[in-house]
Picture 1: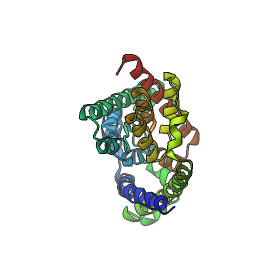
Picture 2: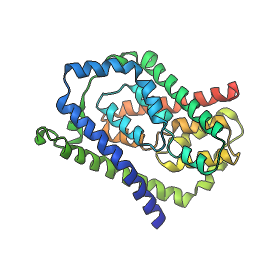
Picture 3: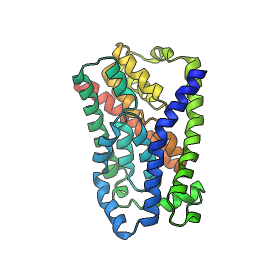
Length: 284
């Protein structure tokens, strides 16, 4: 139990700077945005999936948490958010490096994730929700109202509201992460291999479900299982594409539109399964 507590605290501490910087930017936008800057954000919308897929691929899930917050404030499009989620690597890269995996394999995984994330983001912005790419309205004020953080009472002070936002979201993530860590500790990550099957598409579906677990243990387990030969490369891709880390937790915490959150969750899962299956078909 002490190890579980320490792991949860350590993950919480690593995430705090990302949350604080994100909310600091959000507060600055709320106090300083005007028509010109809103138009700039709208114009950047169509290219959001490119930037999102590249930024999300860096280790840890801080960018996915930031992306969720930016989406709740309508600063980025849904396609950009999905691109960030799908490219998020969480603990995959550190595990691969620790296991001395071939550099070619690591680059291959990262490249596939970036391409899949970029394609998924563009498909959403251009075809599934085509209006989102040109009608992303900056609405940080709504986020502040939902959070009841007292942003307006602080005048032009962006520091205090940012701290309040960070603590509210951080405490929520800490509690959920602690419960998940305790559950995984008692269930054991070793139980995961028994749920996989040799049927390709089913394997992808199950791996994507594991990837959705908002905890770094999911990416660690999937990467370890792949290295040990327990799952295929396509299943690993499906699981890692679905693994948005704590990004989903932050989304359900800060975005007040729960039906929209469930839609995003469904799109993330669906794209992860399909892209993973495509990888197996083309023989990567």
